Image (cartoon, rainbow, N blue to C red; front, side, top):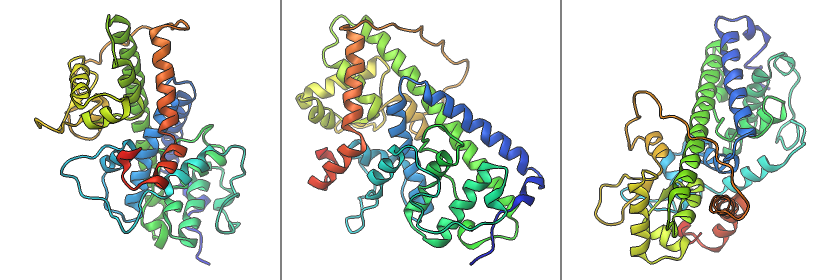
Length: 346
């Protein structure tokens, strides 16, 4: 058996203790916000796509995050590499989400190896213990499931109250070892901290988008299918007229006009620069994916809290969003993949 990569001497190393503190604070802030957010389920799905893309890259699959979003939303993006038909890179996704839905399990359950007893396993830092378990998993079984295990380990060892699927971090040196384990730990903690901060920015942007969508719906005299579109965009922030036509049962022309109306209200952005087969994204996703420059200057004032009454247009929007969350959940993706290979058939 290989010697342990991490031990308790890391805590006395230069910068490791400070990195642990910063990483723990970033994760705690994200965990607290997610637990009290109005868009928790929609954020969890989007964060799962982000985390899954990072895990695929760690596993050696050449893929961009936008390709995982394309698969998850069932929207094809022009001029993107075609999917590999010989190897299904997304087969582990519904299984991973089902594992994260399981509550009350001990950290040692479902591990494909017997954890060793060493200094790292008794470290006072839960983050060091989680990375040590990840290292043991990778050394015992080099599989995509090992790279996906970190959010589950972080929850089961008690670092997070809920599952935060965006917290995927790793390094090839976890498999082969390194002479400077302190530098490796600082790099892993820094990446995990960045992932937590990015997840918090995404959550904040989704909450602002939801509040703004409610304000716009409240002021619309004839919303039409705008309510259903905005609810769908919360869960599936990448859309085309063809996809909207299929999901909402509209004509292709009607779906295009609906997206143009949403673009005029600054609820989506057209990022394809095409006259036909246009591609639309929510503004926060367009910035995160590099299709739009990050806004500068003072951030806009937050919208005031909106109280929804039963039977109102706003409560109907919440029901629509809940329906789309159920449709785009792990069960829906798994059932659709059993029926067809084309994700547009979801």
